[in-house]
Length: 286
Ligand code: HSE
Figure 1 (tube, rainbow, N blue to C red):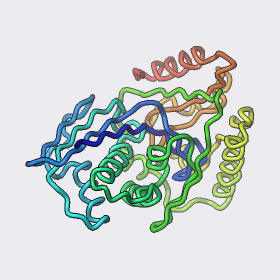
Figure 2: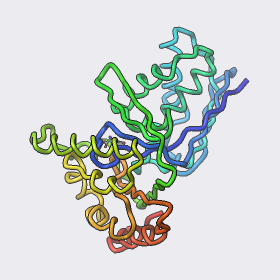
Figure 3: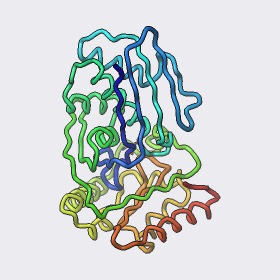
């Protein structure tokens, strides 16, 4: 029979945790997979135009990789994907496709590779573990992938922690947003990020919401990427004045993410601020 998986979108980095922190968001991709006479791939959802539906399709290729890894020969596949995750916006759409393909193919093959093995495969495909970890395990993930080994710890998000994403109406490829980063950084910037990431992880684990604002600062990637996302610097600087516990570029952008304390009831004020800031730059945002 067919297998069905539902995979969440994700936000990576959470500010300072470049390639190390990720959090699942409640936007989903659904993948259905079944053995078939002939391979057929159907893609539903927005901006799926241009994505191949032959055997060069990412989901198909990842499924093939899972079967190879499990040492089982793969049947022809009927694949159906339906996604509500905006593409190329910094919400982990490619990670959700990779994780969904691995999870579905794993279930279909009956190979039952353990989740840690799926995580290692997904990290090596995506080249960083933050989005795939959050999509695979849910919640907040602290992770590393060193080129061969991938390890993670899951943190249960605080029940009052709300995430607000402002998705601007333009795309930014991860490749481009990684291309503007320097290949080396000053030791003081590395130390700055280690300290802030350490405090952020501890605050998230301990449920210390007030500490998030201090900890969500970054010197490794956001300063270089700010030029790619008009309005971003203002949001990072002023979101706290509009009720945010903290704000960051979501993954490689261009989406911005802000956190709020549900108990403070300032989500609408924050949403208005995010929307207006993008509009002032001539950018529509959802
Ligand atoms: N950590 C990655 C980056 C996430 O910031 O480039 C990309 O989705």
